[in-house]
Length: 333
Image 1 (cartoon, rainbow, N blue to C red):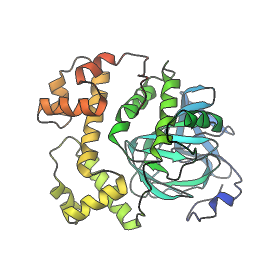
Image 2: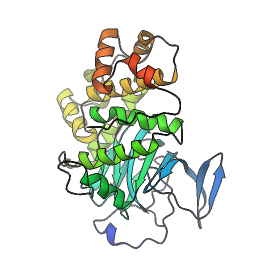
Image 3: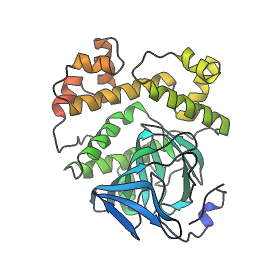
Image 4: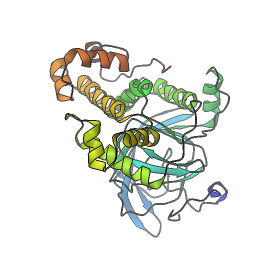
């Protein structure tokens, strides 16, 4: 395994000496030399000793698919390694942020976004802008992806021309179900959830290509995301964020949308609603109004309206449908 200081355009032609994974968001973890810790697997790389920065836990598996939760503790000072996907990878980012670089360029992954990795594609992940992340990685065999593609109107390809789906509103129910699966491994709805993830990935790649992002833009927007995450439920304004970054408000708005995939307002609204959905799913005693206020909403009626728009049901209906051991099975359109 080689350290990855700069991934060239010829990366797909390189022969890799190892497929051992040491960075998060990888679809398939390696079999050689793995230590077990309460269901988690910690990688050991020959010549480097134990790399206790990434661990993986199998959540569910079936014919042509597998789901793992990946926890990474890498930071700016840790080495970046060149890796290779053993299968098609569609990974939901639940927390933290990191960069992903492969043949189609480099992207910044933030909570709520989806990483898209092609089978046998070489790549590098980095944490230049912060420490750690948590992802749930769905691995698919090519035959299953082709089966899903045949059933989707307008989908003519199974490769990924982009490496990321931004944290879009239509993906929110899907990401919420992924979160539920991570907390209840082996759920009866895991196979349906895996197929929904595959469908969302194949449908999403037809929504247009991203514009090139400079290193400065990426760094500043990573700082913006970190600042927002630290103040998720506090009163926030575009002006306060712009002042923190030393940018004009219009410049911030344009750059944030370019790098992250949505506006700062949409990002913080989505994160608050996701936080509220998790509270409702795991706590059946707290009043809905208290959940709304605790998650940064000052008006209950607005919270209910926003929640229904994002998740398709009211907060009370969402809570009622959150049953232990189950994951909702409706498809994302």
